[in-house]
Amino acid sequence: MRTTTGVRLAAALAAVAVLAGCGSGGGRPGPAAASSPERYGCLTEEQAAEGSVTIDGLAPVRAWFRDSDAGGAKTAVVLSHQSGGTLCDWNPYLDAFTGAGYAVLPYTANGNVSDNIEQVAAHLEAKGIARLVLVGASKGGTGSIVAGSLPDLPVPAAAVVSLSSAESFGGDSASNAVKRLTAPVLFAAEENDQPFADYARSLHAAAAAADKQLKLYPGGNHGAPLLSDGALPDVLAFLARTAPPQG
Image (cartoon, rainbow, N blue to C red):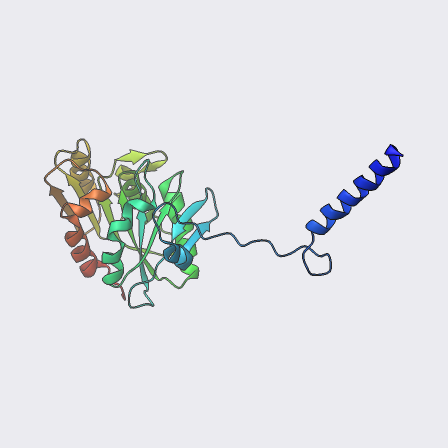
């Protein structure tokens, strides 16, 4: 008697489990829940829904795209972070670029920055972007110089901004690429941030671009924070002259 009761109980429990796994659609499973857009630790839900994207390639590039305030921008500012950084490093400055008429795409990725930028450029080409401005901090600046010198970049670089760049990092050599780079380029660093202030001087001296600038600021900050220390107005003025948002 105990055996019969046990069998019946097991069958009943199994039936309950089957019913619990079914939706109201005649036993068919319900739709999978949609994953939320990635916020990267610094975006609002609204911002994430607007433009979070993962760009596949040699290494996953986790990016956020935003058009200019006026919409329909043809020039995008691609922002490459320094070692240990993320796209969030650029968050305080994005409104300044979109307000000036540029689309923006900060991203987080590992690997060679120049490879990351090639992936990003292909993504932006599909969005109708016609020109890039490459802004990079430290290793991001090194890779931006290299990417800007590539003749087959999917979207051409109209200008490059190097903030505290190293002469080389990983597989990227700015000291070699700068001799091929023809796009206008701005080198910036803070005087007490050594050896990067000296790197800015040497890269500027070696640059083949006809339009090149060197800006050295007081202080010892490194990378993206230069934009808070006086570089942002200089960068915007440089871009307005060399790579206006509508061409």
